[in-house]
Length: 162
Image (cartoon, rainbow, N blue to C red; front, side, top):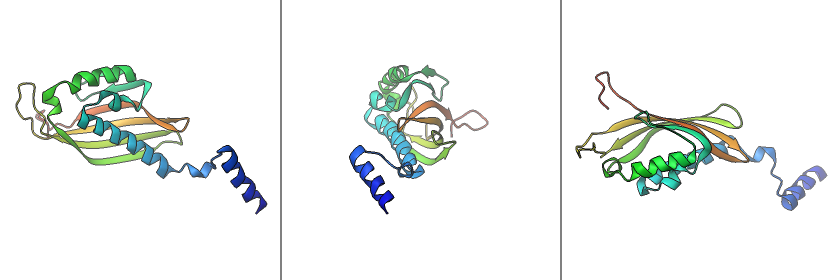
């Protein structure tokens, strides 16, 4: 009993958190919050919010094969994308998401998304796009950050989006 009291006092006095306090459920919630910020940023057209959960040296490749390196380049690219009214005319909806922990400090997240209402550069509707996101998160100092993000466009055999 005395041991339990000593641990409790250490937590109160020194802010020590027991190892079991950081659970996979907490980690998953933190990761999902980062992904939610990404989609919120698209809704409000905020590139800084969209890029905030990337590491300084993150790899990012969009559905069109355009790659960027690091949070600053990702934010700059998203600033350009968010200024394109034909792209921003759509709305995204997460259809499926899976978080898989590869260790205590690495997680792989796959997200399937439907985007409707988006237009082509000429202003024509492109229908519903189906995209897949593959993100690798790492945990450092209690924070989960994206180190790699690959976005792909699901296409049928004729090469058209579905």
